[in-house]
Length: 138
Image 1 (cartoon, rainbow, N blue to C red):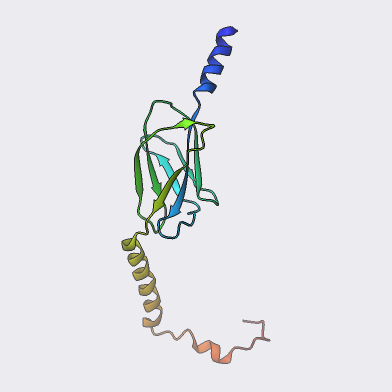
Image 2: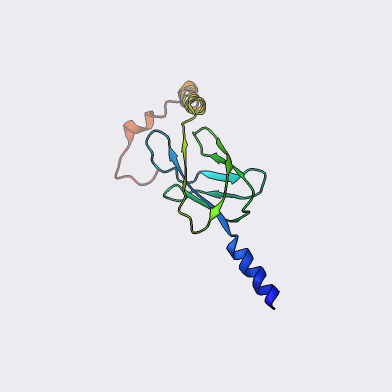
């Protein structure tokens, strides 16, 4: 019984965490829904409405590599992150930069879809000339 109590106390005393926040590098606005993972493990989380993320109950001796991903931004890795006691107030701030290349590709895809709608010869605006807001039978 005494051994069990000691084991539980030792495990609780060693509980460590990594707490952080993901923001836009330019505006410093929080990035909601960024995926943060501990590389080399299956552990990942998603940032909340304040851009914050939390990893709890981590090893006290393992330095971690954080991988942060967010659509439209460059993936970022941070090496050598050490977990802290869960009561510690240390917060890692990760500032992501927009991925200009990804934005250009997305814009080109949208432009080609729009151009294709006009290139097929269909004049989708023709029906508006006869539009009657009172008529609900379309």
